[in-house]
Each structure stands twice: as C-alpha cells, then as structure tokens.
Amino acid sequence: MNNKGKVFVGVSGGVDSSVALALLQREGYDVTGVFLKVWSPDFLLCDWKEERRSAMRVCATLGVPFLTLDCEEEYKKEVVDYMIREYSIGRVPNPDIFCNKYVKFGVFLNKALQMGADFIATGHYARVRDTNENKVDQRMSTNRYELRESADKEKDQSYFLYTLNQKQLKHTLFPVGGMTKREVRKLALDFGLPTAKKKDSQGLCFLGKIDMKDFLSHYIETKVGDVLNTKGETIGYHDGAMFLTIGQRHGFTITKKTIDEPRFFVVTKDLKKNTITVASKVIENDKIFSINSVYISDLHFIVGEPIFPLKTSVRIRYRQEKQDCTITKDKDGYKVSFTKTQNGIAVGQSAVLYDNQICLGGGIIEKVP
Image (cartoon, rainbow, N blue to C red; front, side):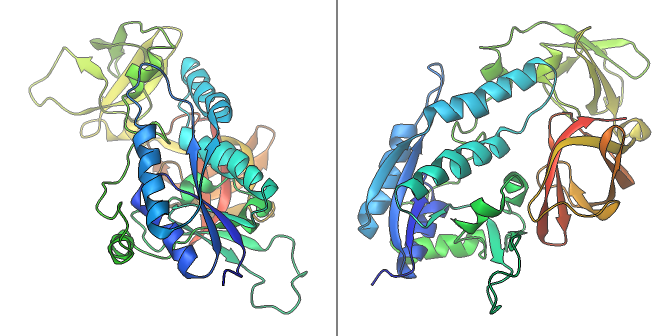
C-alpha cells in the first residue's frame, strides 16, 4: 500500500530523475511523474518533445501516472529574461540557480501542493536533513531543515540550491542525494529503466548545451572591441565585452602573440569602452590571484541569519573547492573576506556558504573592491 504520502516527481527524461521516481515508488510513496515544459526560442533546436517522450516511457515502465506542467511563462520571465538583462549590463548571472528558485521549487512545488501532493522530488544530487526527526518534541525549532551536500562530491548540486527556504525543504525529497552516480546507473539497470544508459544532459537548465554568445547575440548586439594586456596595449579583439566573464580563457582572439604564447585569462572588462584586459596565469599570476574580498547582496540563510562576524567557507563558482572566509556587515553591506586571495570572480555570480557539508545559504556577488 502507498501510505508514505503523495509525491510529484519532476521527470526530465534523464537517468537521475528516473531512478528518483523508481526509488520512491519502491519505498511506498504514491508517485506521479511530472514533466516541466519550459519556454525555448525558435532559433534553437529544442528536443523537449523527445525528452517528454523519454519521461513518459519511464512512467509507463513503472506503471505510474504522468502529467505535463506548463512553466513557460515563469521560465521565460524569471530565468531567460533575467539572464539576458544581466549580461546586457556586463554582469554574469547563474540561470540554473534562478531556474531552481522560481521554476522547480517555485511554480512546480506550489502547483504540486495545490493539487494535493505532500512532497515534490527531483534527481538533484543534494540531501535534506530534518534535524528534529529523532526528537520527541517536533516543535523545538522552526528552522529544522538542513540542505547538505550529496554523497557524490563530483556531482553535488547544493551550490545551485542555496536559495531554498524552510517551507520548500519541508516538502522536498532528493532520493539520489545519498548515492554516487555509479550507484544510480546500476539501479537504473536493476529497475529496467529505458534511461539507464542515457548520457547525462549538460549545459543551461532545460535548454541544454548552448553557445552562450550565440544565444545572447539574438538579443544583444555584438560589437567588436579591443583585447588589452595589463600594460594597456591592444593585443587582440573580441565580439563584445558583455559576452565575456572574468576568468574566461576563450571567446577572444589574440593577434600579437609572443614566443611563449601564454594562455590568457580575462581579468577586467570595461563595458563603456567595450574592452577587456587579459593576463597570463604563468607570467602575471599576481594579476590573476589578487582578490581579497567581495560584497554580496540578496544574502539568504536557509536556517536563519547567524551572528556576525561569521567564520565559514564559501564557493564562488560551481565545483570550486570551498574557501575559508569571514562574513561581516558594514556600511556597504555584507562583505566576504577570503583567507587566501582568489581569482576569476564575476559580478552577478553566486557566493554560496558552507559549514562542512551543510549549505548555509548564499548571495549574489555585487562588488569586487
């Protein structure tokens, strides 16, 4: 009998969400597979119909109901429009984070609860821990749900989930969060799922692997500009400073090459002059690893705001090793001071805070002093 509750499982047509669905069904939940249909531009070859068919085949194999939820409006407004707007003013957004916040754990979760579900579940590699689950008095804390890193550190996606709050975590299940990718693949074979050997999807949330400059060029005019070295000399060209991010190693052309031909990284960009400045990691290491602190906005804490100053660790990009830091508040806002100098920090990206395996929250990088 299904007596653990009703779960709407976001099925994307991939192996992770398929195994999440099968696991919950085996554990006794009343499961329904839900495919989230989002907006896609006319100029992109979008395979959402095939992904939907793949998700339907999984549900048919397991004998569970299947629904399609239209999230086009929310995805276009909160993810795509936001991304275009940020790039157009020289910032570098993280659309996957906003996709999770507004689509998967926004419209999907809200619709699921309205339709009688107790939980939603996804194939994310992350874990939710109820800190009161073994306590007699379940009223001890209103901040009881922790977001934790997954068992598979290579696949961990907690970085993209830092905006989740207590209500969202209360109604969220991550069935594969305690497993490695290898274990998930084996389970997919054991369950006889048609997605067992399907390759992992890559790239932008829902839209897949796209060339960001090509995508943005349909909305933002390209304009050739100069590539400068740290002496201010022109050594190449690019198609628009707004398309490039700090720390990027490609997307521009060097015309004045030297004998050693060092690999250049973008260290600064000037949107008004449409120029970027690059430096060699080998020769000019001090120009690249030179950032001691950043200011962040929209700071969100999953389990409530702590006392400052806060000594913790931070990731300023996905899959980066966690860096020791101290968070303080001053007249300019929240300041993240690093123990070791950092590189490649782009305004608009997210700084995500951790206490060992616990994701504390995070914010948007606004200023690099």
